[in-house]
Length: 111
Image (tube, rainbow, N blue to C red; front, top):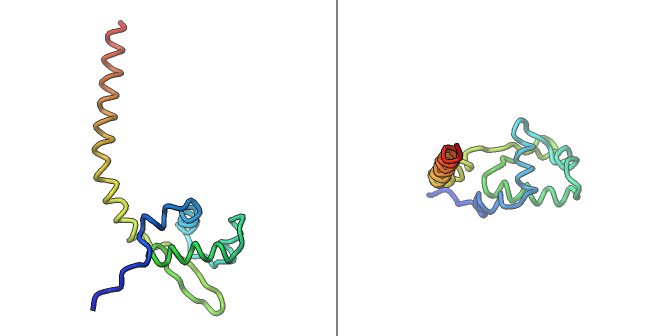
């Protein structure tokens, strides 16, 4: 049987700035929702909803410890994003090289 696909894709999940901040917060440590919510000017329920979307996209792992729910960053789904972005890096590289050539040639013609 095939694994169930996530309800939200990585691109949808990181589209929201609050969720991107949540991921940054979870980079170095697993945290309970109560500690996470202290970093945001919104209710704990709102933070939990954002964490739920991240969990559905596979970007955070949810773990129950007693009555506490803890969240931990999962990096694997971000590889999809990295692969997609790497395809477009070559266009940026070409543009930056063209700009460098333009600037260098402009500087030589001024002399």
